[in-house]
Structure formats: structure tokens, C-alpha cells
Picture (cartoon, rainbow, N blue to C red):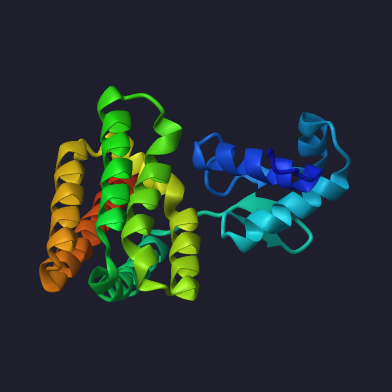
Length: 220
């Protein structure tokens, strides 16, 4: 059964995709009148949609100026990824003892679909979704819904930068290999090797993103 969406939900979902897809640069203003015209709705659902995206960290409101795409600084990116390490390492440590054969099989299924999407060079919009789905499959057996919710928020805030890293860092093969190694450590119940690999995997992605941002902004 198709889930019913309000106009605000529809606008939020579509606008989120456009933001994460790189259509809008960080710091760009989102004019509510123009968006209302684009989506053929009144300003009310646009305002509600922007509030949804503000709660996800993708949009910020400036007093007397309106809504803007959140612009993440290098310091903020490092903070987001440090938080990911802290929470995701904790989740994986708690999850591994509870991983069933079915959990591992499901995570492997997602990983193979993720590999296929990366290797084909197509479905770029789905790359970060597969990435999160794979990690989420490994963390869910921890049965810590609040921590999982925090990870989801952190991933949403950094999603467009993860996409940029996957597209431009030329490290797809390394990322794929690490995912397979991580899954194998989890399958074997090797908590320390798995959590150590997860930490380095996240932090290396962070530094790759920082390097790309610095090059694009002309710092290097």
C-alpha cells in the first residue's frame, strides 16, 4: 500500500534529494516564493518542508533573511565524523554479540547490491543510501533505537559530502574491500578488529572529504 504524503512531505522529500544531489551549493538561499512556484503549492507547505529539512541539519534559517542551505565547515565535518565514530563504534560493539545468521545474510545482500551500484557507475543517488543501509543492518541487532536515530541524523547531515567522496576520491575499491572485511569480522564475532576497522573507515572517509573540499575551495 502506497504511503500517503502531505504536500509538505512531498516538497521536503524532493527538495532533500535536490540538496543531497548537489543542485544547491552550501550557503545558497532558498526562496520560498520560488519554491512554491516550482512545486505548484502555497508557501505554507514549503515553509513546513523547510522546517523538516532544518531539523535534519540541511537547512538553516537566518533572522530576517530566510532559509539557506547549510554550509559545513571543515571543523564541522570533522565534528560530525568524530561523533559517528563514537556512536557507531558503540553500536557495533553492542551489536556483534547479537548478530544472527539471518542478520549477516541480510547485510551481505545489501552489500552486494551496493557493490553492483558502485561498479556500474549508475544509480549515484542510491550510493549513500546503500552505504547507510549496510551499516544500519550491522547496527540494528544492538537494539539501541535512540543511538540508531542519532546515526541516521548524522548521516543525513553529511550525506552530500559522502556522495562527493564516493564520486571523486577514487577510493571505491578500497571502501568496498573494507566493507567486506567489516562484514567478515562481524560474522566471526571479532569485536575489536571490527570496531577498529570501522573507526579507521569513517575517519579516512572524513579526511578524504576534507581534502576534496579544500581543493575545491582553492585552499590547496
